[in-house]
Amino acid sequence: MSDPTNPTNKQRLASCTRLGFRKGGVTAWRLLRIMIPVSFCVAMLRYFGMLDHIGPYLQPVFQLLGLPAESVIACVTAASLSVYAGIAVLVTIPLTERQLTILAMMILVAHNLPVESAIQHKAGTSVWRMVLLRIAASFAAGFVLNAIMPAGSDAAEVRGSATVASEGFWPAMAGWALGMAKESAKIIAIVVGLMILQEVLKEFKLMDRLAKPLGPLLWVLGLPKRMAFLWIVANVVGLAYGSGIILEEVEAGALTRKDAQLLNRSMAVCHSLLEDTLLFYVIGAWVFWITVPRLVLAALVVWAYRGIVFFWKREKT
Image (cartoon, rainbow, N blue to C red):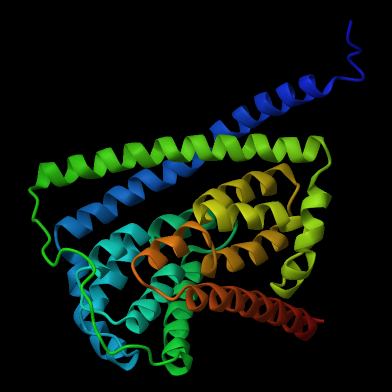
């Protein structure tokens, strides 16, 4: 007969699984309550052509970035919807590999702003601060890359079909609903799995082992070592899932709001390093220039925020 005061590893794993399922279900529901209505509103704006009106105002700025005027639509689409939507437009534009890399960097920093910023707001950071930060960081990154990257080839290439089929209203809405249903299932599966993993790491005291090798990198990024798991989550599966777990951690008292502010800013400009980087690599972007600069940008944003907070408090005392 097992001793209830000294449970076996199997019992501890079962307990972690039950707790992870419960927490994961709650967190996934919180994410979906934000994502579904915001995504629907953006889909409606896109269908009725409201997003297209933004493009003409940004074309002169994009020409300063060394990008063709048509690339505005790719950026606006990605900022409003997702990386995938931005790529769907991007591959119809003749771009050199250098131009593609600049545009990829901008999209990687600023995409899916309505949904991701709303989720980050729930995790403790203002929507508008996140939106403005990511847009400003996106353009800053584009300008810097255009100034320092090697020239590369002058040959522009169209990497996909140059025509986009028009859709009627109901087919467009059906497509949105199907896509949202698939995304919702993915969110539930990933968030529940992450919550179970997090409970296992806590129960078996593996967090410190996880944090130790990442300690130097997290210090450079301006983040405490205790954020190792959350940082890994954000950079493997994305910002939305990372913010959802931050929200759960803050409400449980395991993460302070100050720490959440730091991590939110880091994740805002650098997340999903694995999947999103591979997406752009496949279509021809230069991996180094869309990976290392994002980490540098995340470090600059966090250290700048920490400096502002430090001097603000110093002025008040």
